[in-house]
Image (cartoon, rainbow, N blue to C red):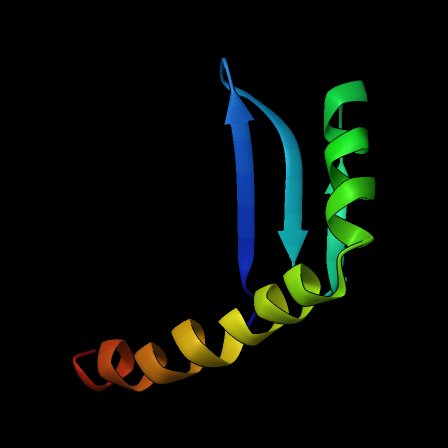
Length: 67
């Protein structure tokens, strides 16, 4: 299970958080600046890492029990 949160502008992804990587990754100049800023904040990173457990792990049994 992987939690991904992507940020888009004008149909172009500029920043993404992936629980597999454990940090933000930028894909444009603006996205790289955002990623550097967000990665420097330990509380933001720990909150995003916790989203996998909060969102994914609690909802997977609900969706797969219906299949």
